[in-house]
Length: 311
Image (tube, rainbow, N blue to C red; front, side, top):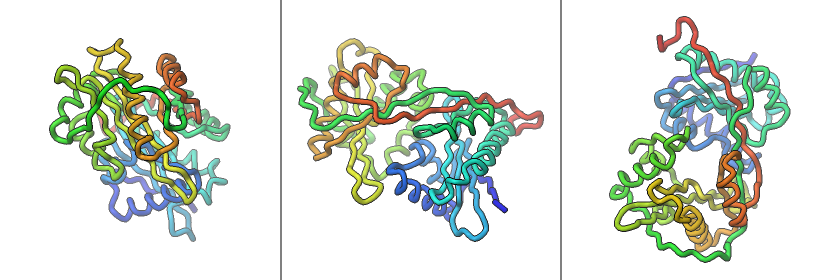
């Protein structure tokens, strides 16, 4: 009999067990399975709007699956990870975890939820359809080799933690005013993200114009998930303050970030972009990027229960 534990907060033992599951999935798939927002929510024990779901089975000393919901700016994010040794059970484990997550959202007052899936298969699409979810946003992961061979015509500097926090927050939130995940950040959100082991101020490139932060390119280096995997550099977040649009700064900041990664000896770069952002996709294609894979969201608008916790 499978056991499902629902956790509003995660104890250190819970976090350790889930981390072992995530590590096993990363070794099997060559990538970390949880997005940064959800992963940070997990390792911090669960912030407001968090719920973790741990599925276990008799005879196994590890969770066979883990799911998580975390509240974002305008919707919940939901992700589901099944242990590589138990993926043949997706047809039974998946519905249990999805239904439990939707029930929690309903009891908490309802709202929109996005289930993010890396390269969805027909099995994912069936699970989503059976749960009343419909296709939503798609994200392209695009890659190219380094160095680029393009000229960089802007001069950037490294981000200075503490000194640049407020200016960066203003640029970010103005640039991503309508973005569900990247917009609406607080200083706490920003500083928490910088606590990750991969954070490097030198890889966080800032462009000043007349003494004002006008744009930035924040890079991230992904260490290999398994022996033999390559190191990949990512254009993690890039933004231009709306006051400086139309000057070609997005292109130049992208090239500057790629040049920084190349100087570190990295030979492959990647970035994520909304599939329906035709202008951005076209820009990146002109810079030599090609679509490598697609992440997709399945969406549901969950109604509140009559006795929801939010009432």
